[in-house]
Length: 320
Image (cartoon, rainbow, N blue to C red; front, side, top):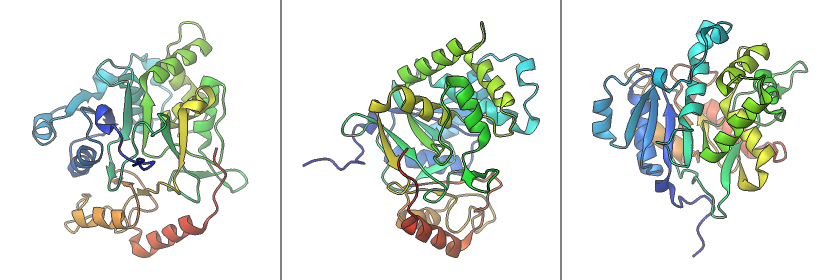
């Protein structure tokens, strides 16, 4: 019998790399979902501190903790000086993800996963039945990916993402498509190739971490870089034949659940009931964004129902 296109073919062969700020109930729910849905041999968890990780390991033995400070590539202080203080850790997390992605500890192909993202339905395999790598994309009408209004009032990929990506690899991302979908499948040889290209395009003796920081600053925007946008744009430009594009209409997901992220006790914790509601809604995964100022922080069921109906009837753009 032919396997369904989104079957979990061989997922247990592939690691997960995830970044999160602290050990809490959201991370536990995310780890539990990864254990159930992807069954990775290792979860390389990038945390501000590994204090208390033994308790997590007792529940999830596959976890390997990597402290953010040790994962960060060497970046001169002056290179980071122009980054707004409130955004510094956000940029550091992205740089650490790229560095850990090249580590010998990580399998050649792996899921790069946001630590606040919980799988509630079938997960996307790391390789499709035809051996291509899946790449999830969304637009402003068929996904909750982040878009910002441009000068004409149209919803567009954040301009900083576009400017830094074009500066780093010479390819400008499309304005009406986002690959910032809470996770991606990365292939280590491609990550090495991309980072080498960035260094080749940069001024002499400038390594990729500094080139990325400089591009983010030069973009002139607070949201000046996205590792997901960079990798997806580079992959489609350099290895398009290795990619299977999957639309968010075909593989729907949510940012924050129908009932909001706050539980009955007033804590930002996912309950079994909330996760069940998301799964019954036909969504494959949900991000539980306790630290984000989000328009859907407490949307209520009616708002999510309207969003779901919009996803069902909106035509959306053509595939990128």
